[in-house]
Image: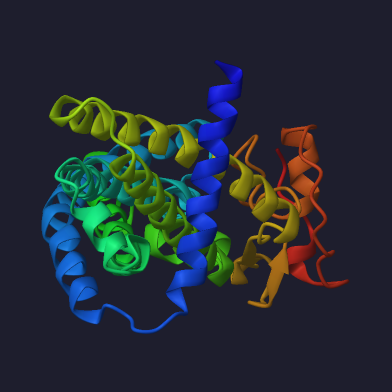
Length: 315
């Protein structure tokens, strides 16, 4: 059993390497690529948009409830956006492509295999990988990247609506926290995840479609196996990519501005205590925070000497 699993894994990686090499060979089947791109997009766009709304809403509601308990409601938008863009959006796209587009790719290639069409192509000197597999894998990757942007936008809008309407959040705080926590590398890793997930979904679907067993019944079994294997690989690869990203790209520290009523300045200041002291929610000057919450360890600059605002209010 272990030997068979290792053999199947090796063949899967061999197909992935062969597809990667065949991408750069000529002639490129552009018409087949366009047809497959349109097919995969047509069966995934509407479900992706519908699924992303409840995903964004659930994330916004859960994050909003948590930040309210911590006294950091102003960061609900930024935290929700990070969760949607980095994790939810690529996974939603990959699961839909694997479940809808990948299953169709696997069934198509499997039916061609049992009808011996692929064997006839090899006899004529036509590579089934370059002729059929490469356009389908590239189509899955392209749709995944484009669909990831759509799911991110719809998910963020859904989270915004539920946070502002149902939880009573302020639109300004939700939107302003984007720049406080989110950064461009978050979008880059999201698109990279979508690209890799689309490649995995296309490769697994093609591999199971090229190797059906047991005639027409084997095609249905191959479709089920391709979806299950793709799901397992997606979650594992997502864990690895997330861990590597968090090690390479440091999280962005929040930047806030001193309230003019305290210091008469609006210069951006970085607070190592997650802005405003999340453990107590206090929004006053630094000197008053330790008396309210000993767990806070802010590193705020002192108020200008001799100013009327240098005196902290009593706790």
